[in-house]
Image (cartoon, rainbow, N blue to C red; front, side, top):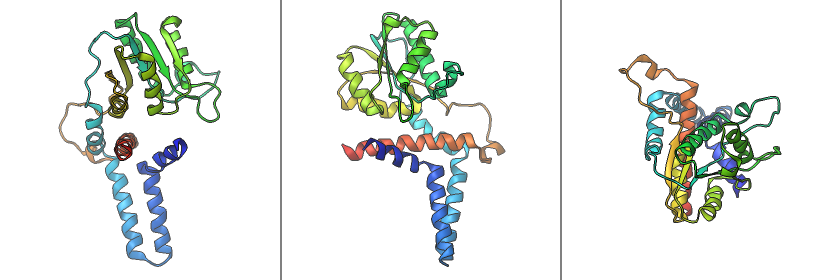
Length: 249
C-alpha cells in the first residue's frame, strides 16, 4: 500500500498529470478525434500555465502554510523532526547530502532546542530504496555538527511516511509536551495525524514560501516560472494527502 500511494502521489502532481493528458490528447488526434484531442491539449497547456503563476501558487499554499503559527517559546520536553529525504555521497558535506527541506527543518529544530536545552530531539525517517543510511541518521549527523549533544538525540529509522512517523513518536513521548517541526505546507496534514492518535502537540512550521511581498500587481504576476509550478505541485501533494485521509476515515 505504501508504494502504491507513493506512485499515485507522484503521478498526480501537475507536471506528470498534464504530460499524461497531453499524451492522451495526441492519441485522440492520431485516431482522428480532433475535437477531443485539441480540447484536452489546450486544457493541459492552460492548466500548466496557471499553476506556474505566482498568484495561483500562493493561493494554493497559503491555507496550508498559515493554518498554524510559528513556534512561540512554549516549553517542551521533545522536539520531533520529520524526515525529508537525502542522497549519499561521502565527498559532499552533510548539508549537501540532505535535501534543502531537511536542512531547514533541522535548523529550526536546533533553534527550538537552544530555547529548551533539556529537550530531546526525535529524528524520524527511513533509508528508502537504494540507500544504506536513513534520513533520520543523516539528520543526526547534521545535529551533532551544529552542536547538539548526542545524549539529546534519539533516532527512529523505520517509519516510511508521516503516518508511520507520528504513530511511532506518539508511543515515545507519552503525552509529554512536544514541538513538531516540519515544512509549513506539510504541517496541516502532520497535525491531522497527531490528532488521529489523540496526541496534543505544539506545531513548529518552517520553510514558508508563500510569504507576503511588498509591491503592486505587475507583469511578473502573469509570467510563468518553474519555482511557482513547484510550489503548486507541493500544494497539490498536500491537498491530495488531506483528501486521502478524509476518504480513509
